Picture 1 (cartoon, rainbow, N blue to C red):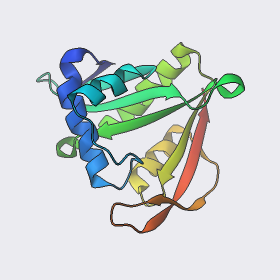
Picture 2 (tube, rainbow, N blue to C red):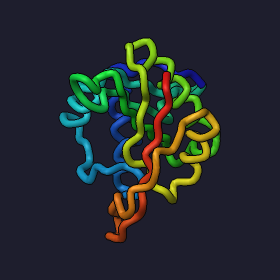
Picture 3 (cartoon, rainbow, N blue to C red):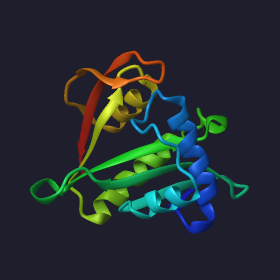
Picture 4 (cartoon, helix red, strand yellow):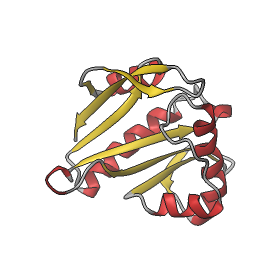
Length: 160
């Protein structure tokens, strides 16, 4: 497994993985699926996109890295991670998060902040806490799940 910068030949697989998470409706705030055009634009607009490539050359996960805000808060970045449902449980997410932290530092960011980690997403929360992220609190009913009910979100951050 290698983590590397994405290239245009990865886009179809990246869009598929991203859309799988969006369709699940339990982790990403986005509701619209990406197509070839919007996917290319979306990934190109990020500060950095990394992909996890397995030994066969298949993209099995990805992350996006971008500023969380502008101006006086532009030193804080944000990221999202997606792993193919066929490959979960293999610590790909951890490799993506660790690579993202390194790229964020290289890019000049000082803090990585997650705005909306769904409270019931215990696997992600345990991973972030094990790596050293600090939870900032709880925002009650901050995330509308696909089925329409609301769940709490837990913002996290780590100094880089």
